[in-house]
Image (cartoon, rainbow, N blue to C red; front, side, top):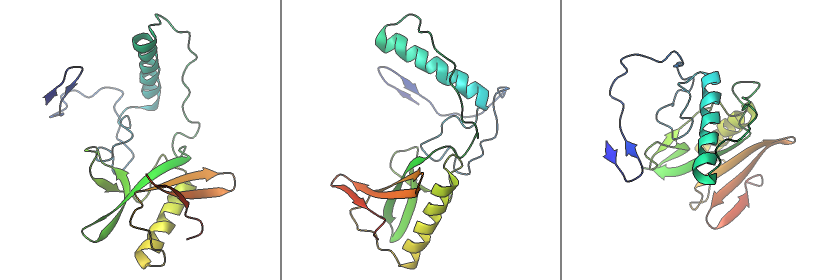
Length: 171
């Protein structure tokens, strides 16, 4: 546990009574990865929670008492909706790790496929990882992130770090 000026942080020890909104998260790395904090909550309840968060932000920051809002809409497909994803890459103990930043903000959690990413992004990640592991593609040491986005003309890639962007398509 941790007590800060504006918030408290705690670690879950046990669930005595499960909420009726609790579901089994479909992602194999849920709980390790730093994203998708709501996968253990059913879709409809997630939307209600997000709507309430938006209202609270308008009240707290904008000092608006009541904001007329349309309901927040979920993805039609439920999954595979994310068309832009940042994967992180690090060489750790001479092994190349590609994935998402962990909950601790320091580790890389490797991922084979992300259930919220489009199939094109997941396929491109597999292909890039295979090329890198086979030695057919060498990634410069300064690269820290791969930005993938699924566009009309296919998945695009950008290598990222603080020095700028370099197009990965030519590699």
